[in-house]
Length: 622
Image (cartoon, rainbow, N blue to C red; front, side, top):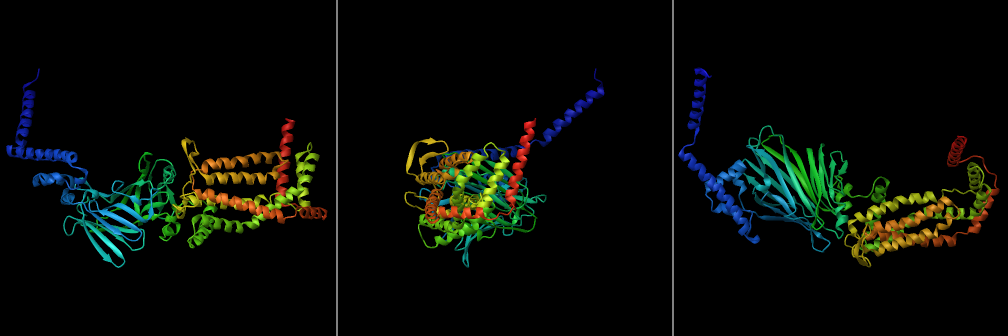
């Protein structure tokens, strides 16, 4: 049973709760006001939906049409709730403003004060249409910061444009002002002869609008990379995000798969790189950490290859005026053009690593640029460049061929040694062979070393041609674009790895390589290990045919020309080198007194043979 005091307490609690609810209930006037606000908001939403359905595409504008018929109070309620003190800037007229010079045309929109379209005037896409690095449907750019318990994005604000001419520059200022002392100012400037668009953000009088505990604000940028080249798959496989740290070290996201990274160090620039063009945002003083980067491959049927996005962090120090000086580069991946900027953008061009990059940077590119000055067809430029490189390498080629000729002359004696020591200890056979080489004055590696020294140039070319924008859309013979594959036959089906077309330059390269292997196969005769190597040499060009069928036709053309020049050089050397004279010289060397001193290579080889023999004997005892 409950006592009297307990019941009295419960009654008093209920009385207090009822009294509190009655006291705080809204009056009839307040209820009516709330209902009017809700009705107005519902009407706005309804009219937004109707407007989206009823308006034809050509009638749609970024200005909200229903705001013309909704009461000012309802409109103000909606905008104030969403934008706070920036409410007045959330409604306006969307206009396009253009900055251009002889190289680039940049279109900016007053809503968001962002770049919506970039056209490179001196280039075309693979369909021969004007080349655009972005368009209104493929890009986003916005500054984001907190304000009065809400998040403000500048891509929803309308800016007032002002254009000025200052010297050789045209300057566009886009201003979103709360009042004379509180505003957001975007400034863009373009010089006459450049692909670089200078850009700055100025925040004035916002130190009390942005919360005092906010020390960073976010800048987001996204571009869907438009397909520019004939081979969509090749272009997608080299499209990615590259960036550099403040110390100049370069890094990048994966080019062949989706990737996402959070960079925990300050970075100087971020590049949305495609096959032959790039869009770069540069911040010399360095973006704060972290920076979020992401690449996403898009559907094969899309006109875009990948979506590239970046989220940057900018420092905010609550000064009366905060300024961020940056710049954009919209232009070609041209080594000299990028190098001239002096920030290491040229490093994103894949010229290979180590010595291969050095060969390209200090030999191949200078020769190519020199020949390009004469306004020759690019096919002729490649031919002349190949002749120059073959001429420079001729001493090595001659030495390799001479060594091969010496080995050919020694072959009968080598066969005798093989027969004599067939059942003997391998070490004795090796020592006899080394003795023969010493007496004859022949270096068995004399032909290999010169060929190895030429290998970096072959690999350098493999990197140079697919990345050389100078070859882009340049025709030669049956190839309409030396930077892409040539086609003499389209197949009605797809062959894995090979593709759905036939490249004639690739076939010529393959056939000439097989012929070259055949011409040099005589040196493999009588050696079981080298006989196996011979078949590998025959197989390699077949494998390359599958790989290079969809590569730049300029590369296959170079390899074909290089093979043909090699044939000519070898034929000329064969006519000029007298094998009888070589044989006579070898015999004279053999009759000369021989020093017992062995070369380091010979001594090392003998030591290896001794070790192998010892191991074999120990295994036999077991």
